[in-house]
Length: 50
Image (tube, rainbow, N blue to C red; front, side, top):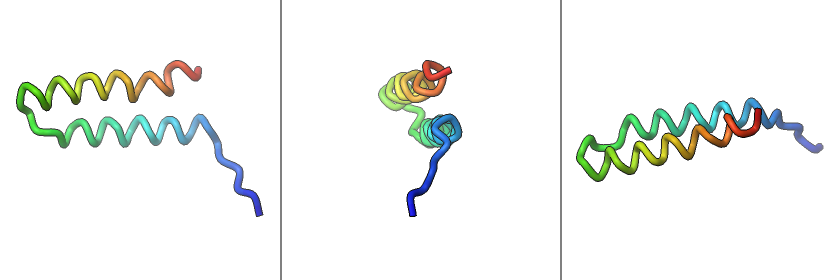
């Protein structure tokens, strides 16, 4: 049986997981820089879909 996935819902879940992961990254200079870039990139997927 083929499963049907709602792409918009999956992208929202992905964005939430990215934010959660970025909050767990160490708050060093390198960690903050990487978390900042990852947050912007991870959230842009859902924002560009709309």
